[in-house]
Figure (cartoon, rainbow, N blue to C red):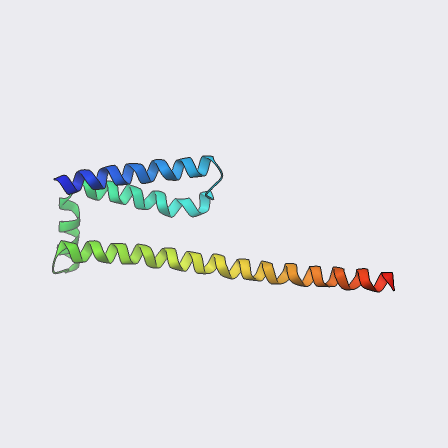
Length: 113
């Protein structure tokens, strides 16, 4: 029961923190969706602790803790994938900006000569 209270408080604080970061433009709404979903899932698991047990039994896990760890690993895997996509896009933008800047500097030098 004590652990459920900790999870409920943690999920509420996570949700509030995400909302505050969105309001202060510190976090993009697209990026925050997964965190909001995670806070809601954590809240549901905390309020209904029998739910992970039932799901883990249906999916054939040996114990509920293995199921919970699998959910955490899956969540982290999704975050890693999303961040990899964002890093790839940023690298492409950086490459494009460097090329544009180089062309601009080349043209400026050419005009001075």
